[in-house]
Length: 202
Length: 202
Image (cartoon, rainbow over all chains, first blue to last red; front, side):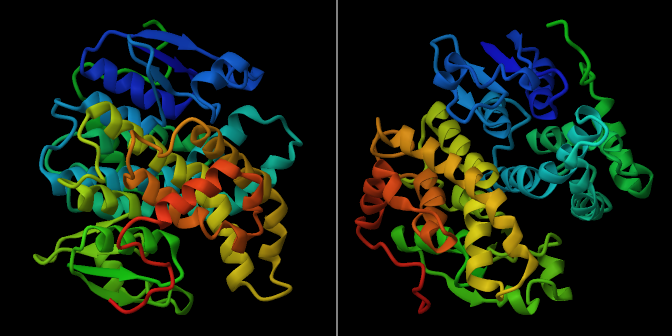
């Protein structure tokens, strides 16, 4: 398998992390989205939406969207709940992540980390902040009564939410305010075979 | 089963449509999101994220996020592909819908339909329009080579994308520009048991 990715991407990191946790070998291809490397004709032929991560199977078929890739790779492992209700709960949290969390927390981090001083995108931050905080509050409330997002073990829902939450401070969010989230972050990071988002030798 | 919903919502319509296509009986509870009926203490106790649609099972358990609900309800029907790769493709399009389509096409429609003249939200429209058009282009390209989003039959991916695409003109998008999308809309609307988004007697 081949993973097209961009090292700082939390969406890409989700997939790298699951592949490593499940000890699945893969070829890692780092593209620089800031230099337009996902907007080339050859990349758009694979993913017309022009985004990483993109997983290419050995037979050439591809899957886009980080959380769809997680679902595919977790099939048959303990990271994908088998019970239909728990599986729907995992998806519920993954859609929450892409709709109510990533557009605020990941985008704030992107602006802080990649935009130059004076960039008009900094004006977006005051709008993004309360929405990202609302997402962290929903997570903290859930984690006040549970160790994981679904059932009693780490699933793809935790991996999806971990990716941008653990670097939320890079986007200007104060994680000290969310005690249950912080304990959960330590729980996920403490798993055997865990890797940091900065690991780049695959 | 009980579906908490808001009649004009495309996200809610996805669930109503699938329940009707699969001839599944349900109790329909219409809440007015504009009057804060999803922000009450009792609703937030069911869904801390304060959003419809919300599906409540007969045993009281709930599932939030329209596309997670679709996945749960389609289990065991022809609307959920059985092959793991096709299942991942369906999820890929559903995450595309929530990340690259709904935030532009549904939000533009919301502003046009529910905001009063002079509302500052109208200023968002010029930013939303090219992004919504980009999503329609990605769909049109896919549909130039396929009748459906996954495999050769209507799946939950089609239902998820149909909901806000078929009313995109209410958000200021010109569907005449997307020939393949228009043919696909007719194909989905032509299914036996199809219902319009305005149907309110369940």
